[in-house]
Length: 331
Image 1: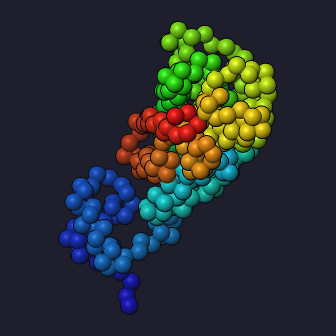
Image 2: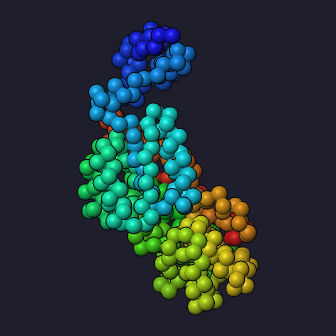
């Protein structure tokens, strides 16, 4: 059976070969009606673009790099799943790397992606200081940051409004009569931590409460970090009535500490997490938490990166507000 060519698709769809090329390569302005007509013709004929020839001509690798601080955290795993599904839909493969919360490894990872000549890079919750991060991503062919900010000339940005989310979590605890509220705040290298602390303190101050610095505790962003920090915090401050946690893994560690200490959740202590990972609905008690659709976030990140790669848009700062999901730990 002869190979289906771009000319065959153009004839079938009754458009020019240039239009088919734009649809296949996701470049240029194409109407929704024309795009659908070309995509249907491609499906009917079983057309497969010659990716190797395209890559050689345009010096493209059809590869997108994605960097996360911790692949074992379900929050990042879901983002990767969404990003991979969307990248695959456009003919790109995803090259994934985890930095295990290590700044040197994050630096080397971005250098390696540059050396591999990937077509674009998505960096989730980068831990590097701004100057170093910008220096590294400026050398990429295109870049998008999740949960970090950057000038449009350097990278697109897709952010979760952590400040708004933290304020909403604290207001929820206050509305339930919880006055003495602590925060397990995650690692100091996390930029989301800074915004969530800002939301936590703002919610207290704007409602006439004082911020007790002893109630804000740094910990690693996993179950062990949450467990260890909670044991120490609750031993020092038995008066606490609520805790807002940097993420759900920390909150799950806190729940374990409460069980061992004989503290009843939510009767004695109300707990709110952040991220709404799948495990949050399965633990006992189920976890009240903040969340966004993480797979949708990954898909959106790929689409925004493709727009930068194809130079159809350079002005991108997208902000998503998390929703409060009320469950048993803080009803």
